[in-house]
Length: 82
Image (cartoon, rainbow, N blue to C red; front, side):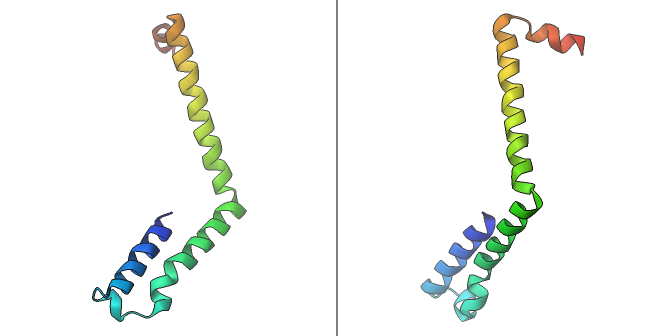
């Protein structure tokens, strides 16, 4: 995501004629988009994307479990047992 934002920023600066980006070649200005494609391909191939999604799911499950225990009045008791 950061590569895309940097690419959009650099493209905007190039089109607006802001120095020093205005003097750069278009290849250099558009390079962050290529890096974003490489990053996404690597993340999908290596399982990084899936791992992050599973971590987010586990965090949501833990928060939901904690809210359920709090609603039952047992949240504090569970924390004290650990």
